Amino acid sequence: MIIFGTKGYLYQLAILTLVCGRCGNPAAHTLRKRVTKFTLFFVPLFPVSTKYATQCTFCGAEQQVTREQAEQLQAQETGGQAYVPADRQQPYRRP
Image (cartoon, rainbow, N blue to C red):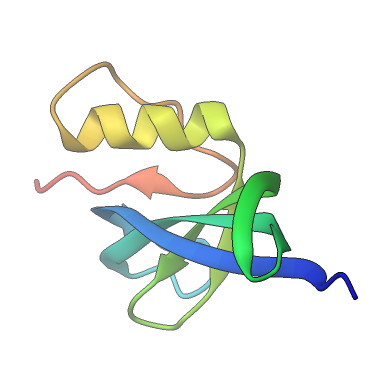
């Protein structure tokens, strides 16, 4: 008998201050990476899919982002290169 399946892993990559596209508040957003791995006998072997998303901590709205956008957001958090915002989300800058 062979036991196989998938298991999901959630990684928090960064916490950023962005203007939420849904509620319009400048709030903290968590940048998360969700990896689904194939398992054999409950041992994770290799990733099947990887998805990135930001979630507003104020209203809970979640928005999918591409890998490149996630890398740019991480670079922005660490003081790297500038980020071109996705859709209506924009980095919050104090006046």
